[in-house]
Amino acid sequence: MSDLQRSFSRDPMLQTQLHLKILERGCDKSSIEYSRMKTDILVVGAGFAGAVMAERFASRGRSVLVIDKRPHIGGNAFDQFDSAGVLVHQYGPHIFHTNASHVEAYLSRFTEWRKYEHRVLSSVGGSLYPMPINRETINRLYDLSLDEDGVATFLEGVREKRMPIRNSEDLVLNNVGRDLCDKFFRNYTRKQWGLDLSELSPAVAGRIPVRTNDDDRYFTDTFQNMPADGYTRMFERMLDHPNIRVELETDFRDIRHKVAAEKIFYCGPLDAYFDFCYGKLPYRSLSFRHQHLPHVGQHQPVGTINYPNDYEYTRITEFKHLTGQVHAGTSIVYEYPETHGEPYYPVPTTENQALYQSYKKLADAESSTFL
Image (tube, rainbow, N blue to C red; front, side, top):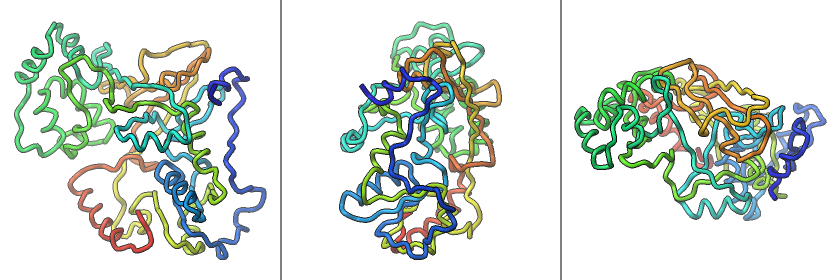
């Protein structure tokens, strides 16, 4: 039985305790003498990239210092038990999926897995439809009974041919036509990015396929699983190494000139590393409103429901679908896109890409720092 499964039978007010060997913080942080600190490797950020980098170097005998400005490891994949005892993803849902067998094999050293294939429904006109759009979406939306060939013919008939594909609007109209675009894509994009489809790179809408069959999975990767004990526990095991020292609530800007490291692996925003010398790279942020629903076994039929045309939030996720946790209540999160706040999504416009390239030239010139 996994640690997570065992915890379900405990008092719901109890929280899991970190087992990671993190430096004791009984002293004033300002008293730590970074000027005398030496390490082979400095890793900035304790999320996926940082934790993997730290573990790989530590396993080869190198001393590693990992810092993170947040009070926890795990980056945006950080999960924890809420006050009711339900495991939640603090920064919205993170679904693990890959086609790379070596990635699966590596992470399996630090976690067992729970089989999970993520499904998303989109609320349109008061009804819920599979997203990505598939045969069921089209048949139910238009009261049809098409087979796969019929769906392909239908899509060919409604699409607006756009060549070349210059932006996300061109891509969506070229794939599914105007009605499906306006019902499922346009308003969701405007909420998420604060921009119209026509203002965004084709890559934004290009991430979402259109299917003529009944496959309602959000991802089709061969390996789709969730860490059995949660992401945080996986990262704890990864960083629990005698050659790794972890410092939380530590900003790179405060210590960058006080630590002597052979190599630095920086996992933060590129513009921040260079002190915003060319200006800030535009990011879209999110705010998360977590809510526990006592005595509600299940709030919604799938892990995530999108709301493209209603409300200020873009989606609601119910975490028990993801974790398989058994609990008398359930916990959900509402996601509200924002202009200011933590940088989550770089805004992919032509102008912003040009600004990024300016920073990339600086990054490429770095000799001992890897960004």
